[in-house]
Length: 72
Image (cartoon, rainbow, N blue to C red; front, side):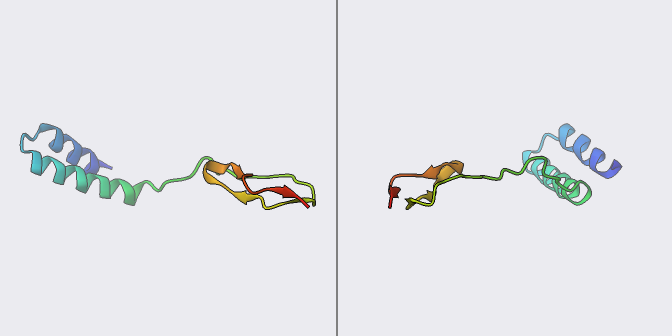
């Protein structure tokens, strides 16, 4: 996108910090309009447990919380 390239070039050359951030902001808006994000990785957590194990909860950072787990 030539408009995006022109905004980046102008932002690089300006000495006024406020104007520079405004130009980068406008360029970023153009970038998000023209280039959609496509996720390359999606994590899926899978756990295998026996029926007798109770009290398992989903914890932080994709780790099962076993603090209150018990066998019934």
